Length: 254
Image: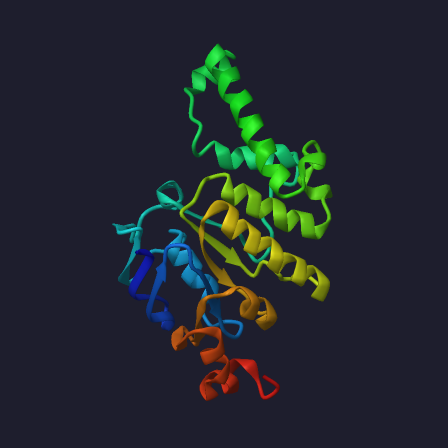
């Protein structure tokens, strides 16, 4: 069953066609890659899928439901969560509170209950604390629950951002260059970590990544973008053998 079905998606900024006639079909449980040179339109597609931008053309369906043009908040509620190439955490909040921010999408109580500190407020806060700590244990971050997010090492900030996204209990997780800024050893550790997350949470993942070793190790299939258009799509091995992809993106050493 298709978890994500994108048909003829497109957007222009002035006279520039940033994304043109983009199509992809991602099955439930699949880990799908989106690759291409800088400026190819990858992050723009993420912004279209999550409601940051409204498409000029095309449609987006999540688990059979049309989410085209919905707001960021509504699309998150419908089941898409994301991380960013440049980490976006609440640096002055603790690690625990960053995860709880994601949980607020699920746990709701009247504002008056929080203001007056009614019993329902404490009940929900206790439940959120417990759920957040369980999630932090999965990421080996429980020992830093009271640490300010800005004080975490870079690799742990990456993990925390993914943890916060997963706290919203998404059907589809979008990872924007999760290995950015990591060395070879850290990238290898990340590969194993993402593989474990996929199995543990039984989640569908769409990932932008420049590290081809990460893509090769993780992705079931991928699409290559160039100048906003699909250059090629298929398995990683098929992509790596495509002469157009080699010329535009991989280079002669691949």
